[in-house]
Amino acid sequence: MHYSVDLPVRGTYDVVVVGAGPAGIGAAVTAARLGKTTLLVEKYGYPGGVGTYGCCTIFFRFGERGRKLVGGLAEEVIRRMDARGAASFLINDGCQMPEFRAIGDRPLLGKVITKTEDLRVVYHDILSESEVEKLFYSHLCGVVREGRCVRGIVVDCLEGPQIVEGKVFIDATGDAHLVHRAGGRTEHVGPEETMHKSIFFMAGGVTPHDPSVNAKRYKELFEAGAVPDGVWDHLGYSYQLDPGVVQLAFAHASGDACSSEDMTRMDHELRKRNFEIVDFMKREMAGYEHCFPVNAAQQVCVRSGRHICGVTKLTEESLGRDELPPEPITPIIRSYGSHSTDQKKGFCPAKRVSRGGFSAIPYGALIPDEFDNVLASGRCISVDECVMDTIRMMTTCMVTGQAAAIAASIVIEGDLSTMTQVPYAGLRRGLLDMDCILEPKAK
Image (cartoon, rainbow, N blue to C red):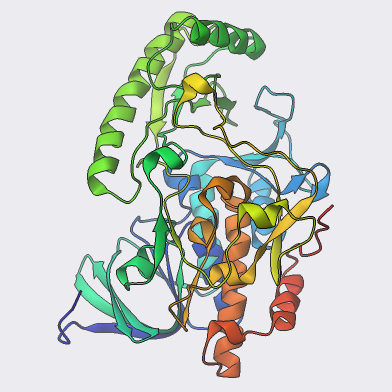
C-alpha cells in the first residue's frame, strides 16, 4: 500500500509501540524508563487491552504450583491496584470468589481479580509518569517500509492521517497488524483450529447463593440440552469486587479474528446470546432471579489470531523437551489446550496436553524474520497455534513487551543493525534489573 509523501510527519521517536494492551504497555513503559523517546499508539481512548475493553478482570499466571513466574511491571500494576482497594486474590476453590481483603505484601502466586475502571486509570497514570507519549483514538492504517526496515507507520488520527517515524517499532496489536501491513510473513490458521471468541459481560442484582449448587445444576442442564445454544459445557463466572456483580463468561462463537466481516457477525451473535443467558440465569439459577446486564465487552474478545513468522518459534515439540529453548525471556507452563470451538465435545479440544515443569519463551520468537528494526510482543509472537495457552495471559504478554523494549534499547544504544544482534547477556541482565522472573527449570 502506498501513501503520498504529502502526509504530515507527526514526529520521530526512538521506539514506536502499536497497541496499548498489556504487551504494549509493558513495551512503552519500559522503553521510556530506559530513556528512549516513546510513542504508544492505540485505537481506543484508554489503555489495557482485553483487561479494560473486554470485561476480563482476572490476571492469571503470576505463579503456578507455588512457583512465581512473572514479576516486573505486571506486579507493579497489581500492587498499585491493591493500594486503591481495586485488587484481590481469588479464593482458589473453584468458586471464583474474591477474598475481599487487601493483598498487602503477600507474594503474587494465584489469580488476582481487579476493577476495570481503576485499571484504566492506573495504566494511564503509569504511562504518563513514565513519560510515554500517548496517541490514542488513532488507528494504524499503513506502514512505510524500505527493504528490511520499517521507517514509519501511517496513523489515522482524528485530525486526519499522519506518519510517525521511528528507529524501532514494536507490534503489540495482538494480531500482528503492523507486520502484516508491512508485508511481512505471518501465520493465520482457520477458525476451527483456533480458540473460540467471546463477549464477556457483567450481571448486576445477584443475591447470595451457593455457587456449587448452580454449577451442578448447569452441568445437568447442559447434558440435557436445556441451555442456550453456543455456551460452554460448564458455568463460567467470577464474582467481582463490587457487591452483587458477577462476570458471566460462557457464550462463545467461532470465526476469523482478522476478518471485519466475521468479527461483525460474531459481535451481533454474541450480544444476542448474552441476553438469552440473562433470561436463562434468571429462570434457572439461584441468586440470579433479578439479575440484569450491567455492561459488556466493547468488542469481540480474541484469544488467538494472526502470528508473526519469527526467527525462532515456540513449538509444541520444543515444549515437549525437558530443556529450555535458547535465550529464554520468561518462564511458561507446559500445559495447553482449551476453549474448543465445539463445546458439545468438551471445553478442551482433542489436543490437550498437561505436563509438569516449565519451559520458556525464546527471544527469537519476538523477532519477525523479514525485518531488522521490528519486534513483536504479546499473543502475536511466533508460536504454534495449539500451544497458545502457554503465552496468551496478560501477565506473560506484559513481560514479552518489557523484553522487546529492553532489546530495542540495546539496539539503539549500541547502534546495532538488526534485532538478532542483541547480546542475550544484556537482555537477560535488563530483565533481571526490572525484577522479571528468568530462572525456570525445565523439570
